[in-house]
Length: 65
Image 1: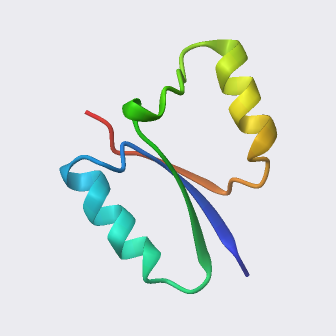
Image 2: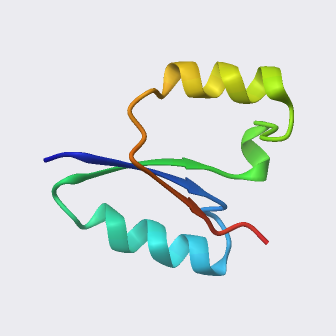
Image 3: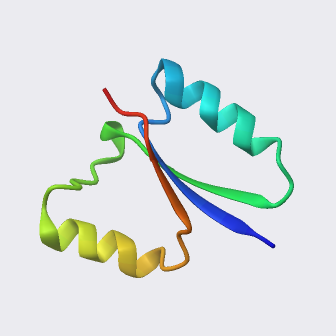
């Protein structure tokens, strides 16, 4: 079963470690965003647009500082 994980803050210390860990797993697809990607998760329209493109997210990990 393929699991989709949204990893927020993948370029930080903890987020980078989590990204590398989950990337090694066969049944996991990582969708990663960082503040350099210019996706404003507080803005309702921006968040709605992002989630409409990525509908099959099973888990969300917030590793942003």
